[in-house]
Structure formats: C-alpha cells, structure tokens
Image 1: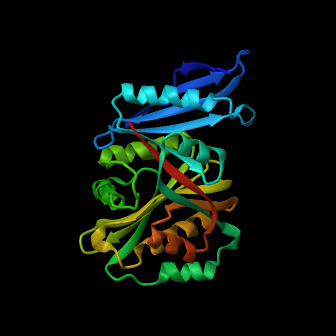
Image 2: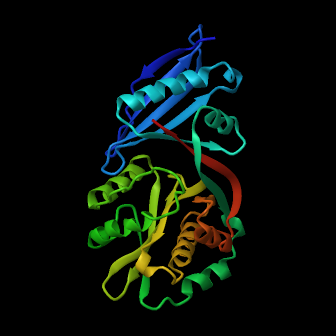
Length: 293
C-alpha cells in the first residue's frame, strides 16, 4: 500500500542547521509516520545530514518507512550532502530497518543514569575536596561569564578527538557567539544550563568543562551534555572532579530531580570508567548508522 508523503514547513531552524520534514498518511489522511532531516550548515559539517524517522507500530512493514526514507535521501542529495546519519536503539525495529536499507553501523552509544537518591554524598564530597594542584573549579548558570567566554570557546576543542569510531561527523567550530547561542537555546526552551569548568591557575584558562541541562521545573531527569578535557591537561582526574561537582550542584539545588542521564561511545572506556565510578548504571544501548550518498 502506498502512503501519501507530504513535505512540511518546519520552523525549527537554528544558527548552525535547518530541518526538512515529511508526514506520511494513509488513504483516509490519517498520519502514519514522520521523517525529519537536519541539514548542518556550519563550517566542517556542510556534508552532513541527520535523519529521525518514526512509523506508527501498526503501520510497520507496509513500506511507510521506506517511502519516508526515499524522500529524505532525495532531499539530502539535492542539498549536496555526503552522508546521512541516523540512530536506533539496539534490538528495536529501527535497528533492523536501517541495516536492511544500506545504512552502515558506525558507532555504539551506551546510555546510563545516576539516581540522585542513591548518591553517596560523603564519597562525592571526598572526590570534590581532593586536591588537584594547579587547578581550581569554577561554575556558572546559563551563559558563560564575559571574563571566561574566550577561553571557554577555545576549551570546546576538547571534544574534537572524542571517540566517534567510523562516523563521518566532521568538526564543530566553536567561537564565543556559538557558545552564547547554545546557552540561549537552552534558556529559550525553559531549561537550566549549569557548567562546571576546571581552571588552570597558572594562566586562568579553562582546561576542561562539563555541562548539565536541568528541566525547567526541576523534576524528572537532567541530561549531561558535553564533558571534555584539553589534551595537555589530561591524566589529572579533572573529568571525574568536574562531574562530581556537577552532581553535587544538582543534588543541592534541585531536590525534586530524579536522576542524571548521560551517553558515551562504547569505545570511550575512560569516560565510561568515570561514570561507573560515580554510580551511573547502564540503561540501554543505541547504534549510530551512516548512509553514504
């Protein structure tokens, strides 16, 4: 059975990407599935598109997903993209669908959760209070303070060599404007961005950072965003130190928060060890797929 595929106007355009959207519907105009294709437009990622595709469970195996995928692939080619990435939970229908349609598995992501009620506050305080000669911690809510804005943008390079296995992700170029825009995006949707940074006391520059986004109402689960340490400062335990401080802040300022969520490449054994040592437990695994065009 053929579905009607209708292109939609998607207002969710950002400074570094724009989205295309399609709605699948049956002969009675009942929606059966959707596809969103994010086209990245910042330097270093103009080759990349990211697909999110969903089909109602009752409509699967009726070629709805294939028709939506065909529309997205055609649009990616029209926009001169080199590859499309997509993500599916391991063992879910999408996992099989992508593999059967020419996508190649390029990355495995492990998702974990830390229930805040289970945190050993004494052990956490010991991690935070442990001396790290040559470094101090700084923290802020929302946009980075003016005096740290430039060094914070530079510190984002700590994410450039994070394990991405075979993903053709490109490189993300950060400057002060992009850092501020990212914080503003979190603020606009009503959430709270909390950042902890390790400062090199010899020159006042940021050696590493970790970010946590808390729901606006302070309930449910918060989400870790980036955590990274610049290469010259690795090996001093800064990642664990910063993340422990972030956990303590969440506990102290958001008493109704349930837990903290994080995802890490399965091959990133160092960050996985940090999460394990802080009490995060795995919840599920997803596979990142890539289709060359």
